[in-house]
Image 1 (cartoon, rainbow, N blue to C red):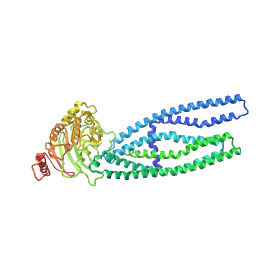
Image 2 (cartoon, rainbow, N blue to C red):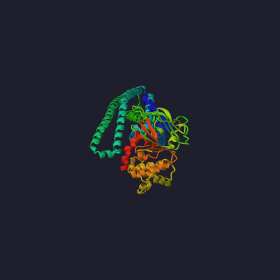
Image 3 (cartoon, rainbow, N blue to C red):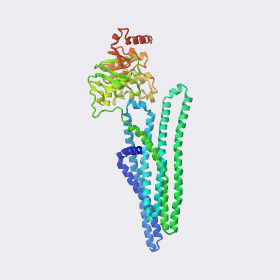
Amino acid sequence: MNNFKSTAKFVWSWFRIEKKYFFLTIFFTLILFSLQVAMPIFFKKIIDIASDENITKNVRTQNILQVFYFIIAVALWNNFCWRFIDVFANKFTFALKRKILTASFSYLNLHSYRFFTDNLTGSLIKRLNRFIWAMEWIFASIYYDLWWLIFVVISTSLIIFYQNFYIWLFFLSYIIIFWIVAFFLTKPMLIDRKRFIENDTRFGWYIADVITNNFNLTLFANHTKEMNTFSRMLDENILLQKRYYLKSSILFWIIGLIFTLSDIAIYYLVLRFWWSSYISLWVFILVVSYQYQLWNRIFNLPSIIKRFNEIMADINDMKEILDKPHEIQDIENASVLDVNKWKIEFNKVTFKYHHAWDEVLQNFTLTINPGEKIALVWVSGSWKSTIIKILLRLFNLDSWRILIDGQDISQVTQESLRKNISLVPQVPILFHRSLFENISYPLENATLDEVIEASKKAQCHKFIAHQELGYDTLVGERWIKLSWWERQRVAIARALLENSKILLLDEATSSLDSESEILIQKAIEKAMHGKTTIAIAHRLSTIMKMDRIVVLDKWKIVEDWTHEELLKNSNWVYYKLWDIQSWWFIWE
């Protein structure tokens, strides 16, 4: 019940944004329903006038025509009301859809790096689409199904009460029994619907994962294995769906039985009253017409509740994500990072991933002076990129702080922090857009000449120029149209164009051949000029000219010198690493 209240408040928080159109739709729906409920009364009035023997033929004809003209006016108003409802409902729906999509897209993209590593993209998109659909449907259900049902029940009950108390008492008893049965039978369906949604989301994850990584399926010839897994998950998905719809069928059967028995009972009761002259023939016809109208609506109640449960479950599924606080948030009144000298200080930093048993960094202290170029070399450990991630504030620190020009990065806006840092990642990430859009992404108004200049420095202009569409060439989903070294060159060109004063290189040349590495290394040397640079290095040949090389064993700094100084002692770790790798790159 609390979950329903929470979801209902969540829905209203969206609806009230466009409450003007919401209430206008409800208002004209109320008028429409009033007119429809009133129609049998007008026809009863015509019958009463026609059967009245105490008035002349001319008076009878005149009175009937007056009622008939009024019925025509009501019918016209009925049509106008539908048009008004269409206009305001559409305005509400389109405005709501735009605001939901905008707010949800923004909120999702402000979630942390960890959030997107824990949630598959396909499942998030599926949840968002179901959420949009559900919000549209719940509005339609409120103003048409639910509002119509409530109004018809109340208005019909009042009219029947005015005609005969005992018939009204039967109506009231039936409605109460019906609601009790419907409530207790539909409550478990909400749980089944939630289970189905969770399973359907997992099934969607699986399909998206296999299709996205189809190359692995082909490479390892595992089509049969994946089809077996697909069949197993599909059977489980269908089983849950069948269980849900079976309970729905049982509910409809019970409701249908109650409906049939009640139908028989009301006809018998009204006939007895008419036969015993407690009511007139015209009252009998009026009650039967309202009974049919009311029964028709109440009989649809299980369908309404079933759809309503599905809608609420879909909304609640997305609500859980939108209610989830952002892991990384700017503090209130966070300042904008003011970078002048570009000095970086790691001050007794301790950090560990939630899934890691031990700290990745413990009391890690490192100072990088303005314009200094340092390389980080790990002897062991699997957390080579952690320093870059925490410097970009993709994670919050467990203790102490990181300073840039004396400013704590946790006290400045994330946007201003990242705008002052250029990154060339180990795994290039590109949009399924044109090469021009990918390279110019950091600068909104970058020109083609600027993009070409950066591409030439990154040694990727030549292969781009050979494409049929040149810089308008799409890179493909997950960059499938580019080779690994082409992707990495594009990522380097993007960082060169951004030209931030802090440059991070996460094994930026690890996937390049020796010839390309030499060319790009020259470009990187130009890009590093006058910038504070941190390079994560695996291939030591790429860091020989760095100002400092910091060697780490897990989270401890064991050596910190220039390349030449580190090679003076054969017992040092760097010397041994260099001895191993130099033999290989001499022969490359």
